[in-house]
Length: 140
Length: 287
Image (cartoon, rainbow over all chains, first blue to last red):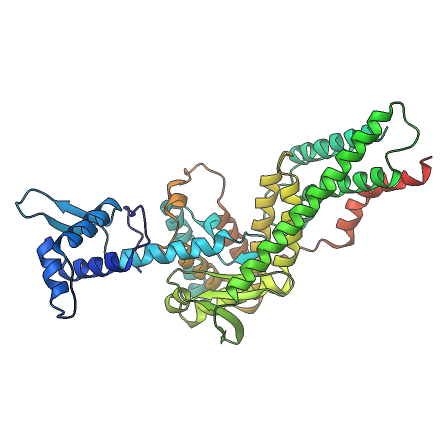
């Protein structure tokens, strides 16, 4: 599984055009506005102004999805989190939303946020379990 | 007089909670310790609410009229009692509606059977499983959990959830949750609530350990907690090494030391609660 990223876009919900453009950026990894525009217009049935692509990409940057490299003459944009991480964040959000409408009284979970521990402690617990398992295997 | 009764009930509720704090049962994991802790924490959470309820009922059934030093006091106690009863009723309704909404939302997801357990599958990559509902809860599992755990570990998780079902945890904790919410202003409410939630998990773990290997269950628990899909905020609240044993540590420790508490409240617990009926015994003496 992919860990949750350190960075989190401020707004996870995306409009259809935003989602489409983000998808193209994920495919191409690093893009200029022209790359995205060309890719969309590769479909002969599509029409989209160059300026609209620029606007959407600026909006995606504002929402925290993209980084813009302005050192070159042509601005280059790249995603701030991977496609998998984005999926993970969305799924995490959905689950949190589901749980927000309920509470531990009526949701008896196997493990919940109360069981989350620091990484050192988790290691210590893992070692304790391993020790018991080893001990058991030696006995048998 | 009636106002005095209410003030007395409030003082007793407060004193009872404070007294419970001083006489906290030891946190040891032996069977008798856990049984005693379970009973005393429930009594400490529930008794103040029941005492205030019986006092309010007693005051209301005696009415605003009667013999009292100052007529205004009667009205005040009457209003306060009504307010408390209405608050309790409002809280019950609110929680009931919330549960209904959650269940309605849950029932939109497909029902299927996993390892012989009927359950709802949430199409989600998170590792999550829970019993959701009241007396007859619905087992809820995410697709992520099904994908992540192998057959044996999945069986361990499902056995734990079955434990919650056998003990009707969601039903009893619905009511305990109402007591908790009604006494948030009293000391120790949160501590008692968290401890009861922990004991409930230890009991479900213990039930599962009777069906499957406890070591396997401990490993599954660690696996699910370790899986990266956790709220980052919780990770930031990391414990220092000197912090008291965490909830996870206590659960694993209880599993590994092999005590299998059934945690019954029983008649002993009911008797410990009987004194809250005292305000009702005053009614016949009212003129």
